[in-house]
Image (cartoon, rainbow, N blue to C red):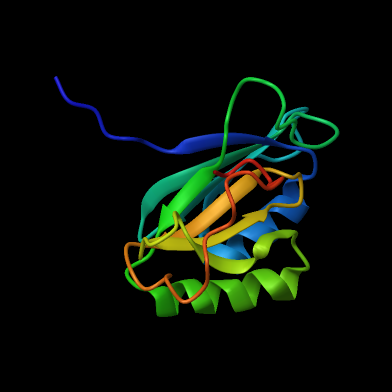
Length: 147
């Protein structure tokens, strides 16, 4: 038996704000959404395939110190796509970690942009190569926990 990841479901505190963020940064389409029920949701798709479901059923911000999601990572074909995404992420005012695009490890070429959505959920947009322009974050330095 083999498995592939299906869609990802995230709890958010403000569905409209989160839908706007994910549409702007990732270009997702709203495939379906609930009306005025107590727990609103939106299905976000790319090229007709469901990628992300947002559920408005939480308060506060993401708690990185508790068990659960570490970060959600999205691969793009090349470092230029990461740079374009970085520009959009900066436009949103999102928290960006490590000052911008960084390699995954010292001497490595893969890497990307590490940032947070409006609820503090940690996200990554990365490419398999081309991120070796800057040094990797020090493993002994306080970071957002991506490394």
